[in-house]
Structures are given as structure tokens and as C-alpha cells.
Image (cartoon, rainbow, N blue to C red):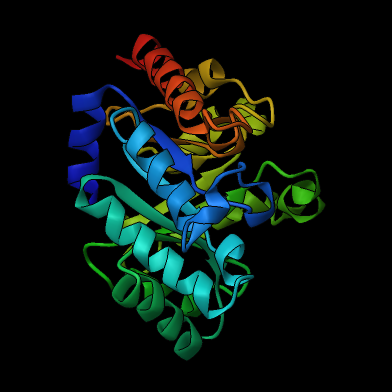
Length: 267
């Protein structure tokens, strides 16, 4: 799914929910151990329960890579199961020298078939542009994150601007910048208005609503643009809405609730 298709789905569903499939093998509900691949079975049921209420899925690759080769197979099988009806993000937070980034881009865009991948900007232009060469794909640059340690560097001054603003400003000069999206945490919603002055048309991937306490209303108020321009990620609050055998039903209820709130706030 490309950006134009994503925008169309957002307006069709009146939702900009991204469900995070951060599936922890140690937190699976009882009963799934009977399946050949319990992690995939969990993902399959969550996807079936939530696909009508969201427009995107995000796989945090660490939860799969820790399982070795088996985890990569589960990611591939999960992405294949989702299909082309949703915008699929590989949350891999990669970024290295050019030829290495080229290999990462091949892995996530060609092998796995993800529509977008998260990338760390610290190594600069040549570490990001290999991802931007893929015309129908998106690269999601870390900008202002919601974790406590995000302020260690992101708010430091650089030539009169906080570092995250330098990331926003400088990245817009790179080849393929029109395919950039940015991570901006919901717990920093008060920054969104100024962020939009730097990147008025870019999509923002916004974690931190739900389990981390960010305000959906504030994110919409300060961050939306004419295309909505937001993907609100919810992981634990959706996929672990229940620890029991009704986990899929509980996930559906929470995803439906969030989508309804989005419809009220933004459409």
C-alpha cells in the first residue's frame, strides 16, 4: 500500500489507527501453545479482530528477531496474512553507512514486503537515502520520541534549534524526501503545532497514546493536516486488552473504541 492508498483508506474508514503487533512470546494467552506456531496464531487472531477498525499494522521487529530465523519467518507470514489492504510498517529502527542501509532496505522492502520502515537519522543523509530510493515505499524517520531518554539528545540545541528540529529541517533537503514520514510521540503533543511548520504535509507515526498516557485529542488538535497525516500506534493497549482466551474479542473492542474516537475528533 502506498501513501495515496493509505490516505484513501483513512477517509473511507474514518480511522487512522495503527495496531502494533509487538507480540511477546512470554505473554501469550493460555491455549495457544497447542498450535505449531503460537506467535503467528496470536497475530492472526488479532489481525482478524482489528482489521476493520485500523488502516495500518506495525511489527516491532525486535519481538521477532529475538526468536532467530523462526522469528523472521513469523514476520514474513504475518505480513503475507495482512495482505495489501493495510499499510504495513517494519519498526526496525535501522540506519547505517550507505551500502549497509541498502541491504537493510532490500531486506524490509523486497524480502519482507513492508510498506515502510523506521530509520534512525543519527548517521545522516547517506544512511537514509538508500531507503528513499524505493518509490512506492515510505521511510519513517525518528524525530521526537516518547521514551523518557528521548530528551537526552533530541532537545539539545544545535545552531539555535533543538536537534529534532534540525532532523526535520535537514531531512527535507534529501533526495526522496517526499517519501519521508516521522515518528513523533504523543507524550510530546504540545510540540506538534511547531513540528507542522517544518513538515506540514508529512505523515506522522505517533506512539504513546494508550498505555503511555498520550492524549489522542491533543494529537489530532495540533498534528492533523488536510490528509489527516497521522498514524496513531496502539500496541499493548490493543493486543493485550485481555490476557485471557477472549484476547481477540477484547482487542476488537479497544480498536473499535479508538477508531470511533478518531472519527469523532477528525472527520
